[in-house]
Image (cartoon, rainbow, N blue to C red; front, side, top):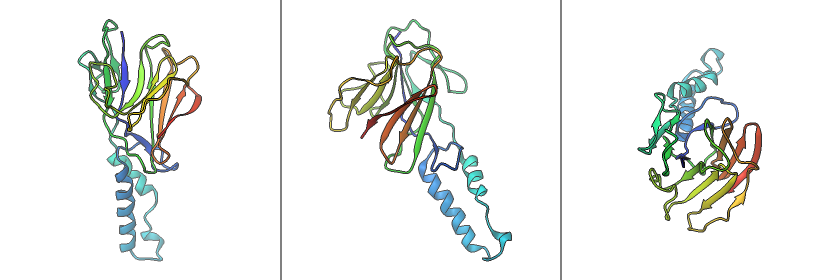
Length: 210
């Protein structure tokens, strides 16, 4: 079986290092902070009773939180009830892809992060973790000719095609790749425009920079 796991990344951990909850849209950060700030200005000054605690921002974010999940996926795949696990039959010979729910917001002070646990993978197979701008490779090879994409293969090699249609050479990035039982963390820095990977607790640094 050949399986591909791709996502339109837009889930992020926080807009800064102080908030640990996960939220679904970067604009929400500025909307919430701006609203709380405006409300504070309407309250009496120089009176601690009317000071809005910073915790209020976090509580509003938590209330507005929307979970990331697998959203669009191949007809050859099925998902768990909570939409967080991909289930395959193990006999499908074709390409099968699943995309995440949200879009990535680049050029912003946002850190996007996902953790993927592989219950069936090996370095000789054809599993891919990828960003794919086309968002349409469900029952075919992951990357249409016109798409911009960045991918990490289970054998540890990376592949990419940039917006200007330039292709990157295959680079052996992650020694020994990833296999069954491994947890691969994908991190995108929206401001620095970088893509990085960790396998279990091992950080392999920046894989792509655009």
